[in-house]
Image 1 (cartoon, chains in turn cyan, brown):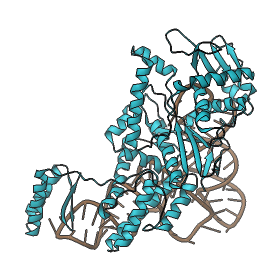
Image 2 (spheres, rainbow, N blue to C red):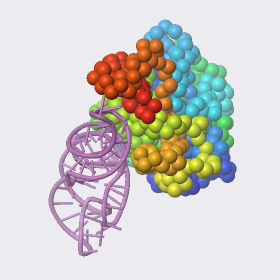
Image 3 (spheres, chains in turn red, yellow):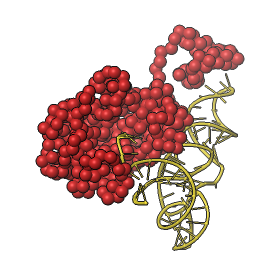
Image 4 (tube, rainbow, N blue to C red):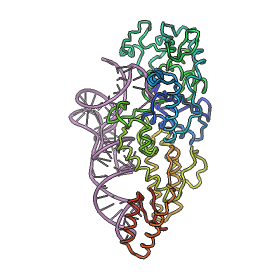
Amino acid sequence: MLQLHDTLTGEVAEFKLRDPGKVSMYICGPTVYDLPHLGHGRFTLVFDVLRRYLIFSGLAVTYVSNITDIDDKIIQRAAAESRSEAAVCEEYEAKWWEAMDALGVMRPDATPHATAFVDDMVAMISQLLERGVAYQTSDGVYLDVGQVEGYGALAGQPLASLKAGARIEEHDEKRSPLDFALWKAAKPGEPSWAAPFGEGRPGWHTECVVMSLDLLGEGFDLHGGGLDLKFPHHENERAQAVALGRPFAAHWAHNGWVMVEGEKMSKSLGNFTSLTDLLEKSDGRAYRLLVLRSHYRAPIEVTPDTIIDAERGLERLDGIARRLSLKSPVMPVVLGDRAGLDGEVIDRFVSLMDNDLQTPQALGLVFDTISRANSAADAQDLDGAARLGATALLLAGAMGLEARVETSSLDAETQALIVARDEARAAKDFAQADALRDALISRGWVVEDTASGTAVRR
RNA sequence: GGCGACGUGGCCGAGUGGUUUAGGCAGGGGCCUGCAAAGCCCCGUACGUGGGUUCGAUUCCCACCGUCGCCUCCA
């Protein structure tokens, strides 16, 4: 059974499920006001890997991830570009899914949009007001965090200590600087909805509470996201659920930062921070490999060099598939019949993944297994090679990594060069054969000699 | 000020109280090959500094140095 780190307790503990055999997870999605960046790429990959591993383990997973389509930044961008908020959201949501597809991230089972849940948010805020844990000011409705038991649990700090660090805002109507907006009163020219407590729009922390509980029910299994969401976003979501007296996420998971040049990634740091940009320049699988190579809670360093490094690593994966004519299993991979596979390797993989997703070691195991498959093939042990190779591809697939064998069709000129080279080699005219090989290489091909003659690939 | 993470061989990046090693990339040597490529084998003998615990610490404890993060919108 999977052992998973829980942000709330700070400990690795058994991932117990509300309903046996079923997993419900809610992962905080993007605010669609700009291109996705590397941090988005990491969290989607991390939770995609978790999701796939749960599926691999035979569990039925319901994966919900929202799209925030009403927010200050969206409004700002729409105003700056003189177009509607909806147009901004439409553009960047499309970019989002393009990037997700390029990364091989599975689409969520549901992608609730905040604006479709405003009625439920209004109802929830009304309840919080009735319960006396929320209060109205001239510019909206705020949650009184002082009344929420255990506020600060996710941050790992008591309320008093958080208060000491909080910057004093000039907002003198708030009872505590940590109180946050559930509802922002309408301003001229901004999108707004009607509500008993005044026309306005929801605060950011409200949507995820409503949508997760609506779609997954009380006490759903896992709530996850990037480390920066831990506080205040998730703290504040949790505070609302606690204030309502409703059981919320049973388990919290957060992934570590993406670092660039030793510092937390920020948008001002050049072109490599845009995921869209990265995916135009590199194989989408390379970023997944990079993400798998470090533990999900540790920071990762992303530079052009580490991406290139990862791309080269992919060649080993593709190489074994090519050499043994193996196909990656159909994704998502479910561990079923072990016939033709190496049970011991699978068991080791499962025990590594069950231990809080030790993907770095699991990946090491995959590479090890590839080496063993190659050794077996070198020794003419074709059954052994096929078994080990298929196992390696199965496990890579369980983490969402697919081996690719290029089947690019060859143009007539390339075909002719290959035929000519094989003829020259057969005639032992090696000078000519080498010249023809150079010609192929200069056309961008990687040339290898095989039992069946010259083979080329990109 | 409060809370926390991290410092591993050329680079990235795991892990562990002591017996044989992560893994990838790069580098050196070898096998294979007409020569290559791919593949396989071998190699470099690493754990920030100073103490402490211990028969023994990279791994535990303390201090220090350094790096980074959160406490504010952020994946």
